[in-house]
Image (cartoon, rainbow, N blue to C red; front, top):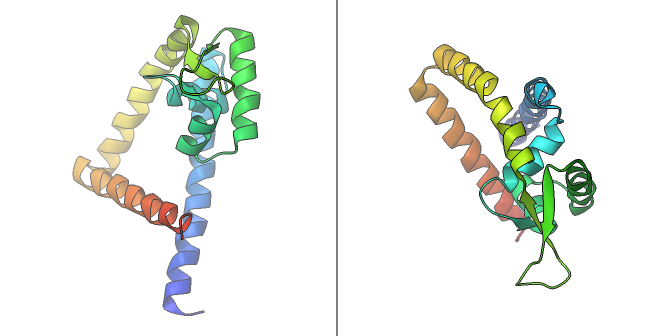
Length: 147
């Protein structure tokens, strides 16, 4: 294996581990709000503006079918609602409801504690560099999709 392959493999394996760690933490944070990490992920995508299912899927890097299934559950539970999409008659917009906002707000205090704990361990500067590096890596991988 050449050095570039080793870097790529290490980045991938570390990302897989991080994904598992973040999912575990997200499940723990979401549990007191009576939602799952996947529900939280979709609610987070529409927190500031309604989006079509395909837009949520693109934003979150998950399949449209998974988002559709979760959106249907969120609507059924009253955490989200479907709205008419002026840009596309058949592709409804998913919008968060007040119950959805309340669920996300209930996550806030524990989320803030965990963020403060991680920032204290890493320091603001190092944590900022890590986030910037992860964002840069994600953008680079996104560019491969258009090649």
